[in-house]
Length: 302
Image 1: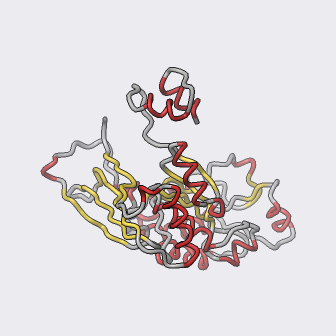
Image 2: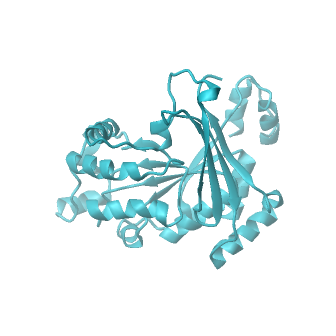
């Protein structure tokens, strides 16, 4: 990480702290540092380490919000692990990205629809998501089950229908970063090889006279904005152990010009999360009793 900052600074540093300080006035200033990990790896000590590195956003493979599905697919973590991790990361000021995988072993299109809704109703409420339909590759144990007839990949048509049905339900505070992981088609042994799934879903939504109001679908692109035409909206919601305000400036055509995520940590709702929160505050005392601005983003040229 220090060498990444050295590259932006154009000079070598003696420590990570020095590299951070130099970058504050460098021509190429860092605006975000993203890491990817597992929900069961998030602890107060790990969070303190990530903050020391300068991490601003954490991505996690939630994959499913059904413990039975997680167990069948040998994920090694539970739904509660994901909920605890999201709560701790949000209370620490990070942006949170979750990965969700339809078509895992044991899932059906209908169970996937229900599972996707748990992301919002059960308190996870990520800032961003990536939808990664399960893709069958020869090196995976799932391939053996497929050969034995115990696993059936969804067809492209099934995937388009599934994602089209869930996308309009995504809250306006969330951004859909990706739909489908871009694995070369020659590696995929069964099911959909379609890499343009996002465009397919968008066309299907238009045919159905539906729209998605996620951030990516609303963010303004290539259009001039008059300040007098913008209106401020405050979308308030309550994920696990927090009260959130998504403050957005949008045009009369509902195009998003900028937003701010304001977070008010609330009392933890489980003994384990309360213990984690106290450990966090001992490591990073300035977080206690603080409101947190977790993200500010304005679209357009600098």
